[in-house]
Length: 359
Image 1 (tube, rainbow, N blue to C red):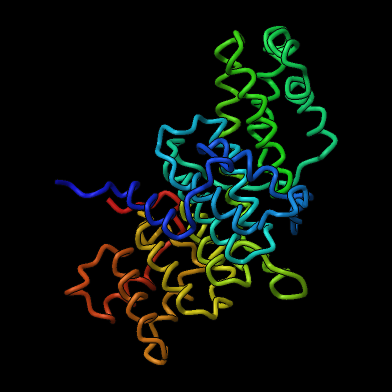
Image 2: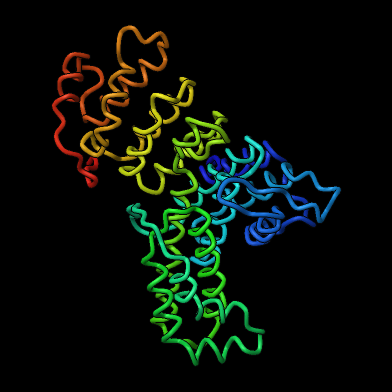
């Protein structure tokens, strides 16, 4: 008799940790997504506030229960548009929720979703966008979402070319604001759900699928990206600079899941600020499992990683995992490589290679 699959084991652990969703709360992942989309009364770049529509509801427990349902999704449980809405909900919780534990669960759920949904490699980049231009660009998509049920089929067919052009333009955007990326992601996903059920041209549907996947990566990475400026001053920092250790580690996992090479840039910005050695160890393990070769580690992170290997590092576990991770990244035999050899090879690394992967 075989044991449970890894995904089933994860599902059991999640349910044991938070309790199964009550049947009245959610009966599947998309019910859970819809529940989470109503979790907040206000949304924002910096923080969100819980809805008070149901005064008897414990918002943290409600969020954890519904995240557990989404986190346990199998690869084929969600289509591209459902996946996009799930990423938007989970990443917003990670970025903006008032609760440290819920932020951590949000990040981990978004990372699990990303790993389980086939979408191809994603390379993060960000540019400022003009909101007026974006508003005009989104008009065909907004019209479909705002239409009545009877009007939607007519719009999807009659404006198929406009919808495809808008989807391509929006999908090519790389906004530097999480709030903007999340808003566009939800818009594309909701428009895609409508058009997918219509007789619109296949090219229109494909443009919406591509835009949903691109914006899902953008929103997820921006949600976990550390805001070092806030961390250095007043206010609650976000992402990999979060003031909660579990949330920091969860954000790091999400960055590595979406774009491991770009994640090392973000780690380089905050590594010396990570005072909790357990967080560093979690991220070291993540780097070791990311598939990156040593050349894929950004130069800003190479020095801090080597520093954790210093003999004067008091935490023996951190030194152990530093050596283990660097050895793995360099593709050295951990049983044979000396610390001197490891240091020499690490310091001899050349230019950053975003495509450097271990075979």
